[in-house]
Amino acid sequence: MEAVLMFTLFGHAWDAVRVLAIDGACLTVSFFAALWMRETFLAAFQVLRGTDSNCSPIDKRNV
Image 1 (cartoon, one colour):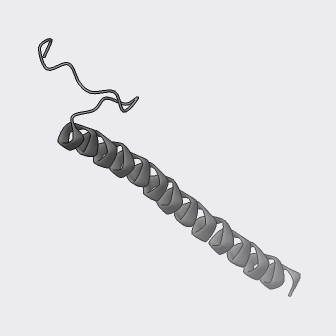
Image 2 (cartoon, rainbow, N blue to C red; image 1 turned 30 degrees about the vertical axis):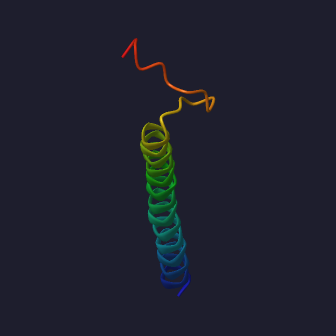
Image 3 (tube, helix red, strand yellow; image 1 turned 180 degrees about the vertical axis):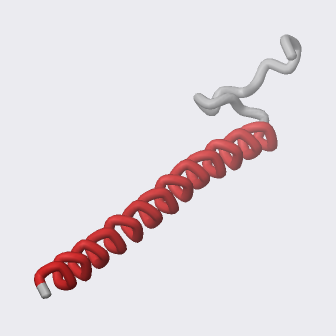
């Protein structure tokens, strides 16, 4: 009986660890995807506005 109980508890604990690991991986991927999208959007917006990262006009003579 104890073996069945321990196996059941270990099985549930392993399921919880597995779910947390999968959720953590998904959150990590989502976080870095959001950062990449933010940087891409900001870079595209700066090109459209003609400014650099400090909002200074881009000197197009040196481009």
